[in-house]
Image (tube, rainbow, N blue to C red; front, side):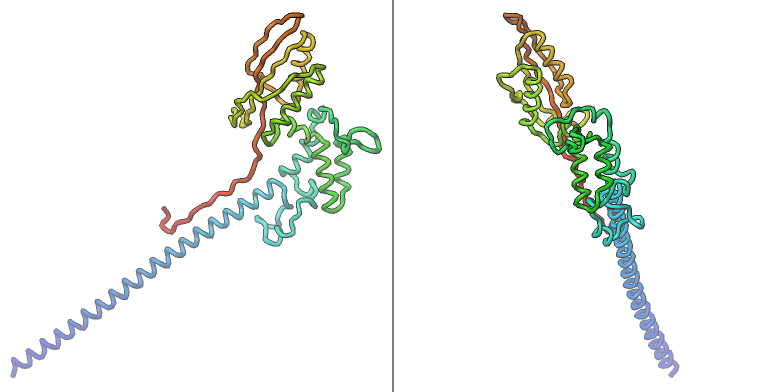
Length: 289
């Protein structure tokens, strides 16, 4: 009888142990699942935080670019809202409304540069002031710009400043694209102003997209001419005084009959590629690698 009671107690103890073991196993499994979900949610939160941070950085970068160029008026907050960007009209903004921006500095400082304005403006009838029958001064152009009303008048005034102020000299001196025909025409004009007509003008045949230390692209030209010493000196002086740079890299000089001086030179002219804003793509990974 006592033996049967002992066996019954052992059976109950064994069953209790089994139940306890199952409970521990289930609890462990639930804990493991809970930990896995917790880690997953933490990773998702961390990843989304990285995406939001990168998005905010992009918005700030775009806003800073717009502000520094002067495309729109300064935003009410740190960055532009969608509504502000929709209402932004560059042609209706005056330079005084976007101080210290690239656009304002160009319109107010570069356009008024006395050294650049000293280059004579010829051949553009739109730059003649009908009241004075002389070329517009920057002061006159600035008055037209300040008195303009509406986007169409402001745009017209801006175009007049670009065409008739010191700004016109910059693309003449350093064009924003490669144009060999315009380059040869400029050189031909210098020869004509020197009272010498060239037989032919052409690139050297070795024109390339080589870039010098200043970032300007190079066009190589041949400059062959033969004339008396006085005409030769005039040609060289006009080339030296030209607003368009002709950098003579090598030259051969020889005397010919009838006191003629023959020069065969090679020169570099320059241009720059149009500047653009480059967009970059940033990849965000959950692992952080």
